[in-house]
Image 1 (cartoon, helix red, strand yellow):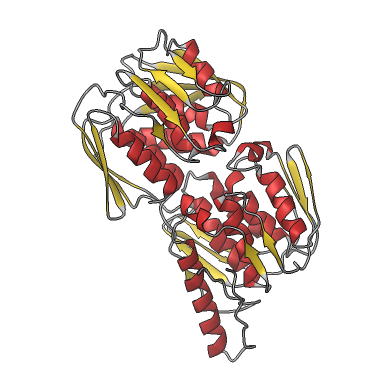
Image 2: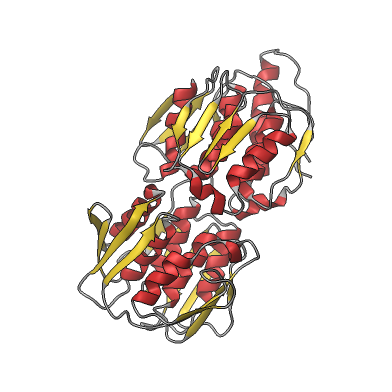
Length: 443
């Protein structure tokens, strides 16, 4: 049984959180490791549903073996030319692995089918598929146009001047950047059309390619160049997950307590680190350097904020916004509507179920402060909905979820970590003879 205890508003010594490795970096590292002949270890990897799906899919290619060893993935490639899997690659609801695999499969000899669950089969893949088709990669959509399942036949691109629409997902560009590194060409140029959402995720891809010795860079606004080559590192260490740490930061923000996150800080390329600055604007005290982040919650105030560069932490901020002293307006988040669920709608649905006012538009949401009433939140099988809304149980009784297990998609140890946070908060409070804290069961 999953539980979150009601710890109320507390003041105590800093809790040092244990945050798993970055999901975004782990997915990229698995693809980069699979492009290198030899054995590559991905250390401090996030071991979760999404990364397991990707690891298992890569393991199905001929000439490639991937296994989990403790908290690491070990990738061994013994062939210059990979061969396509004999069976379809099922990746559940994992959007990033699906998009990365579509381009990765285009470099394998033979025919690869990538498929997923019902929700993933509705999510857009068309911009990436259009790019692959224009460069001469044969492919067929087996279901809805521009969606999974998709069958790709490996083929050498007809040219190395590619273009892709960047207005729906940055993952399409990242997939092509990783694919470009595998080419037998002097250089690959990629032009992005229409603008680029979630740019920090592209910076992460470029940083990882450069880290393994591949020249990959943005040469001009929305124009990118990759000089292909094999990765030259046999060990990749993954930093903590900025999206995952958002729940501990939010826990501190709403309980006015202190949380320290080691191993990730001011030098991180993860865009979701920007949540720290947002909470500083809302009234939290923040200390951040290259070694880590410490945040102390305070009296929160509402803000207007553009969160285009940190979409995966919008839900976390929305929960903190319910405890502010004025409304919060979050905008430029249209791509949240094509995530694991329509997350803008999910924010409003969950808050309405708890009696809190919220409004939405095509690319915005406005959250009003309020004391939630007891109620059950529908998670829509979305890990981020579950983790974010569970944090209200730190302050209020009677808040439950319809699905607790979906957190395994990105943070399998979430409930245990929140239990440790509650133990620390309650222990410190009792030592100080503060008000006795009630225990609230969240599941």
